[in-house]
Image (cartoon, rainbow, N blue to C red; front, side, top):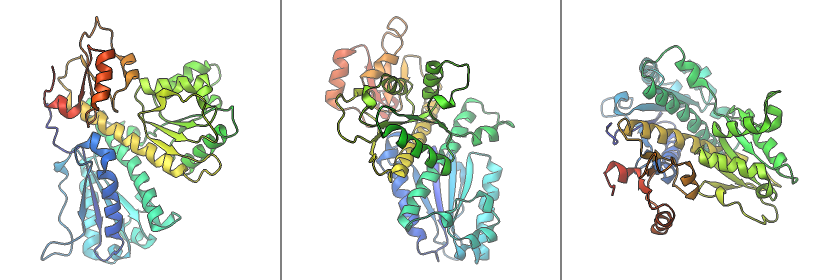
Length: 394
């Protein structure tokens, strides 16, 4: 079994010490990617986020970066005029770019263009995240940077996951790296808000991150059955359920939610209730819920960023499972979020697997949840990943 303490992804943030806002931006990235959101799938302290700014004694540039300390490495360079006007820093950044390029797609430099002049000096304009083009305050731009990086980190981990399954990197690796993440927008057309919000989210996705979205019947090729294609798309997409007043009453909306849960896809609920939901649909729980006012869709970016976080968490989990389970037996079922009763619907039959073990991200379930599972499915064991790795089985 691979050492579970080796980081899957380490993020370095580099900025010139003369850039006063660099430390604030770097700390915001550290707080986001190390917080509880990622602790449960990336380890007890979330993603490792390390800084490169202060120079050691006797030099004008930071310490080098060792790409062998983690499975994958991302280097975020905050490029401002101080960087562009310092020859030693330019050489440092160019050396990092050459180092990661030689390492393959498992290590990347992500330049962030604070000002355009820095890109001209670094000669990396086509690769940069354009902070200088984004609207809003420094805090709003920082939030957009978090979302952009979550998407790019997801691409890295998807490539790494494929590399684990097929170690020989071939000419198709770059094509796979560039493949987009599909987004399924589940919504009801039977009130005034569902389709309006879905269209607004779709427009923002296409204008922003460029995520491809699957959007209802109009995107289903001619000659294919609606229900078959629809449910197949749910299984291979990240999903946003737009919970308007009529959503829970619609058969297809309920079926899409159940399918998403059974296939464990990244899933966010946009709570857009205007008046009342007469019968809350129980299978919409156990996932992030973001409030999105149907009469003012100014929080669409919050929904998208949380969806990107869920996509990144999903790839982190799948990589951890792939590394930890090379020799695991078939009675182990891994799920990317805390199990719920619907999880039991996807278990193999008792005659095939008499005593299945469901392994899920930390922390362990509460005592009352475990008691409910024990009453309904006494043959099933529930273990967090840490408990399972420690051998806590009955």
